[in-house]
Image (cartoon, rainbow, N blue to C red):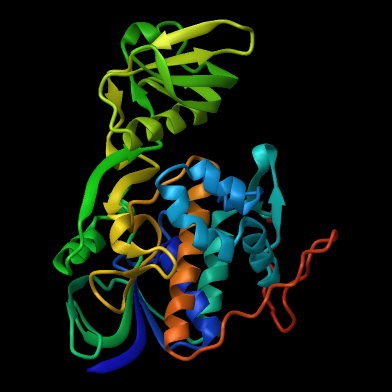
Length: 377
């Protein structure tokens, strides 16, 4: 039976960033991914363009996440801010660009290049990535943890669960991390679909299927009073209504557990439309999962479990979710790095090397790096 410092379970956005962070600190680490290839959901982000984050301050991002997610994420977002994330990618050979709405993308606008950067870094830093490795059991031992997969058993001093939510299960997010958390004493908040469209009365869509309205304002109403407001695009689909303004509204509905509500849509021309949705689309189609490992059972300064010493969490496996526009990837990356930094400190490792301030000119790849992800035409 082999032993390592850290086992990261999950090879998505949070798990891959955690593996790279562990490599930076010199931690002996194994990343386990249940699918044949890592980063399946990452490849879908931003219509495969990979909206990495939003180019705003960490304080503003905390505010945009709202309660209770924002305050919980604050230490992670301050330790690895949106601007630091952009500098990190540039330093490792993939420059970023800021598009409309302050959305940040890789300059190639290819999610595949983001995934390639992560896997290249894992290889260069001697971090082991084992795909097609379905974890069957996670057990607490006297000196750490024992992880049993289909064909091997490995022990470690620390475990970081980064298995994601339960939306898009074909990508590997099936809720196993939350089940292990339960077995180790944690509470899991009920799952709800976040960032999903709404099913509505067919009369709402009649004669307008395919219509897109830009820059609408949406109020989520309960008994005629607004309990949340969103801005963005409103789209009429064959199955119902969507677009960024509506999907962000669905997150408010899920977070507040609303049952009887209406959507008041304010168009740029001054007209309004009020909709009473039948329901939100199913969680398997949602961009993010609302619900997960309860935040009150996690030390938000370190992301270590309060129930099981040495167990850490990162990303959407937690009851953490944000609006559209790169917030959820930023949360995954920031929580991953804070968790690994906390583990590294306990292993006697020094902190991460400071990132150089970004100049007005695009930063070149870090010295010694041969990676250069170019736009393909």
